[in-house]
Length: 478
Image (tube, rainbow, N blue to C red; front, top):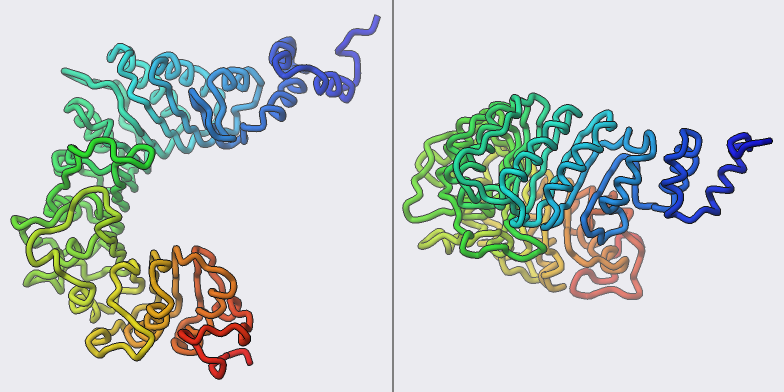
């Protein structure tokens, strides 16, 4: 008598296609043939498992996330996890320890891991010792898979006394991201210091703003570090704890950067404040090529007696408005009144600067007429790229004035990047024509992160000309 497995695989596949989804996993566990055929049907119906990216959540809300129950089913299918490179897991508040242990047990078939992202939801009901043991077990399994990026988000249970993980020094970790929720107790902070100082390949730190970094940064020594970036401390778009919103003194940053000679990118906008007691740095910091921060932060660093020798090799400057930072870092006294022109007076002669990123909110008041001499006093002859964020906040008259002002201040700019401008085709076409007519050095125009040769933006709109930008006689097409 013929058995079920004697049928051609095409018929077995049809049988699986007619089987309820809840019955596919028991069928897949019956033998290797059905594990492959029924398992593939289960994965196809699930539709939320992408192969290389594994997003796990206790409460799936997005189309790419799977639950822990679904993950258990996926893991039972041979080879389903082999090619997973990126693991992103959000734990529940009530079953964190159980979920950590389960995750550690099922990732073993993965051949090579690149990214591990763990998001905790304040698991305060679990035993602290049990949580830390399960957390350590997961990291040990992940180390065996050779992960390179580690991202820890959310709030973990506090710990008293020692916090000793038996994790050996790890030479593959290159990027580390951590939220302030992991910094709230001294043992956790000591563990992070130990982890980073024993990871010789770390090149990137992405840190959530927290006053605790004032204590941590002086104790770190990461010779391989190239990128240091602080992100604003928020959860779900809202500040978690406003009482913790205190910035570190900017001298802490200068001292840290001076000890890390390979550091070439610094984003300090939301973490460091300039205060009346902030001393002028004596560190030249020639290795830093990109600086992102508020105007007073950069002005303070380079405005001292030796300011011309500090950050002397800057190539990219990104000025962030106060409203976009996570802490209250508005400086007291005269620095609070500094304008963009005050910074330009210090940096316009620096031939190393190739790109400037500023917000439309920081621009001087501009109109469609010829800009005032006071607004064009300082020019950047060597600047090749200019990026303006929040461009949609400018009026049509100010946009026309910006083009004429930019032509004088940045006469060699080759590329313009205009972000958040809410560009419609007709508006983009008119702006491109205005730039071509007024600013001949510009060859590349990027509007809301879409970059093209400037002529490609133009569609002749002569019948609908906006007189504030160009008159019909100025049409570069007709």
